[in-house]
Length: 393
Image (cartoon, rainbow, N blue to C red; front, side, top):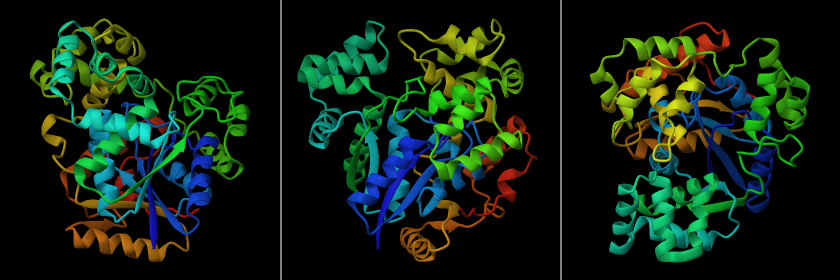
């Protein structure tokens, strides 16, 4: 049995995601598609716009064979750690291929750049530190140091999906994984806000939902996925961008300076800056704007806010990926796939969970808090993580 893994958020699932699944099927008709999906919070630290069960059903309705959880402690991380955790989990489940999208259509070109990033020479390392000392952000300093050593190839670092793709390739090499990289060319950027694109971005769709323009948002989704978005709207389960602001600011205003310093990614004074600026801010969006600078991107502070909100400290982040993998949903004919995943995990000392009700691992305690906060934002009852059952399309 051939298995293709996809690391995803589906926030929400849209036509571009459906295109990716279709392309994977076209290239490998015999494969089973296994999606590793972020649960309640995204890589950038934002609450997902829909609850887990609806996003899982969207993916299954479009042809995913199974969806497993990419837990908070792995998914809400910088790009390098996000990719490394995701590749490690998919590898442990026995995936044969890793499919991912990127703005760059050439896999050899991406692989070459990934090699430079994974094995930097002394000149490149020295220049990176020099640019950091001049006040550039890590991403910008990396790009400028690469421009000086490999020239025009450094432009690959300007696109967010390219950056993730490069980190997937680095992770495959670092872990010695035998998974084949399967590149799907992405012709549009997640930054696009227009709804007239062939594949409107998740950001554009979320903006429509925020504005109450539901009809246009429905049209941007594949036909099979629309009922689940419509159900979310009808049930009042959409998460507004400011839904957790009160809870966030309560946490920020009651945390000690030491707690700020113990937040993951809080080095270089970012924790202190967040603590100072929260007192001058009226909402999360304003707080991020006040903290963001040329040195520190908004995404870093967005994750700091998520860590504070979910009460995550440095000690909560695993050195490796959790041994347990939580099954969120599967198609009716996916039993052979589920059995294979379970056997592969068992051989490597892991376990496939059909329910979280009896899991007592530290990562699951973090998940519980994240799910309860998300439930607060979308009007669900608390205890959602423990009550959750495997979804079907």
